[in-house]
Length: 442
Image (cartoon, rainbow, N blue to C red; front, top):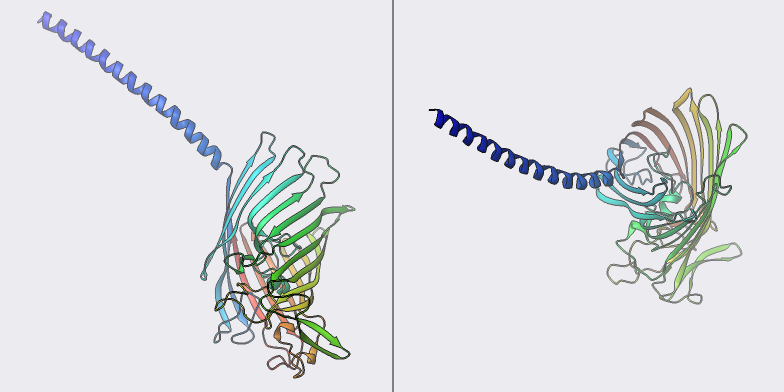
């Protein structure tokens, strides 16, 4: 019994040692594997630390003053209804930002989707690179907002009015385009030039209204921005100058341009200055100013913006054609029209009681053809169309910032067109729109 007991103890000890060695090897393997997994995990976590996810949704209810109203307040109404629920925007955005050891920007990538009952669309897809030797230049390429004016570049989540003005929606439809842009701004701490920014970009030209580039002509856009500057303790001012030089391929042996002979005005065929395949102009000039005065309630703000220039469109639309004007059976086969235009946007914003409550007034106008007006449009002796009619809109609203993630907007647009001799536009059309919108932001 003693012998067997001793051997059982020896065998048990050996088994324990063997088991310990095996467990030790297993633990070493586990530790090594964990170290490698941890290194990978930390790299992944570190990478995701640079990612930011944000977005907002804008459900709204609208009532138009007439069934089937044509509208720039979210699109035309269907023929039968005069009211509708709709999801105006449903945005989700992913940003990846990489900084250096001094927390200076190096690379940023942005991807934004818009999902509504009308479908899912890409709204932003671009990358930006900052050089940090001189801390002066950055470059952006991909699909992003055109660097022209204030209203075009003010986010729909921050804008007080439900929609941009008629001119913005016509000449800068969807606001974005494919291209490349260089930005010049001093980012050095204490620089006396940090309040200035210059953006210089080259773009396809048709924006997101077409699936791709349809001619060889590119648009150049440049702007100079003066960032917010203090004038005294309570007043700040900012502004900018913008220039757009673009074109569209001529699709016929002639195009139409304005001609004035005394009191007679009309579009006439022009076959001398350009030929088929030539370039027809899109040239815009812009000026914008913003004033903000701080008070115990919050702020009083006044914004103003004016555009003028030349726009090439079709006979019945002043917006840039969204398809190849040379492709038979698909493209726009009618001649193109060159019109001199002018327009603007003006805002008055006032906080009431505190920063959570705000009232807003807005006036915008767009005159697609400044050389004709009133009863000249529709005159049997002329060939002017609805694309030459001036529209103006007075908007008024109340904005309640309920909390950091929820905003309520109540807004009414009075839309007025000039009275013409054109059937359907002899007097002001009934196309006013009331909007109540909730915005959820994250």
